[in-house]
Length: 205
Image (cartoon, rainbow, N blue to C red; front, side, top):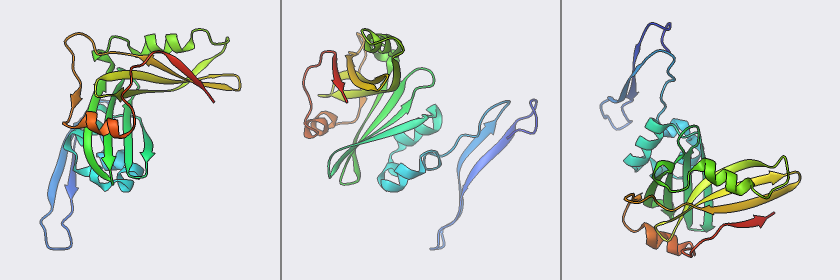
């Protein structure tokens, strides 16, 4: 970290030479300024999921998202033994999400979603999810899910006393906006058994 509030510090990440005689190389360089946190490589930010799926390290766009937008959490969803979706989520400001689809541990497609491109933002979605709930109900979790390649919903977990509801609020793309999606994403989602039209619904557990 900088020595004080008036100084900057140059930091570089050195890749150590491998056991086969390779040369060391500088992987990243940062200038860390006043009150800034040290940016971490993607593998250091989420070591557990990168250790579980080594193929994530080879996705340059995912690494860029994690290192530049600093998502604070991730969720892993396994629909079938060989099919997995991992949601990397930044919900500390503008809600953004990077969705990775894996098959047999390999990345087959990715999608980037930002609430700035949606007709229904996070605040409005949370308000819809809480409406009709008892006083004191609160949002415990929120995630964006994409179905059929272009249908986007907020999936919101709401707790009211001992009752938990899972609420899905539709949130279509704003006019002129499109998803940043790699080819084949719709086909992969179809393999997860989804692709229907949505209305707001609640699932209690």
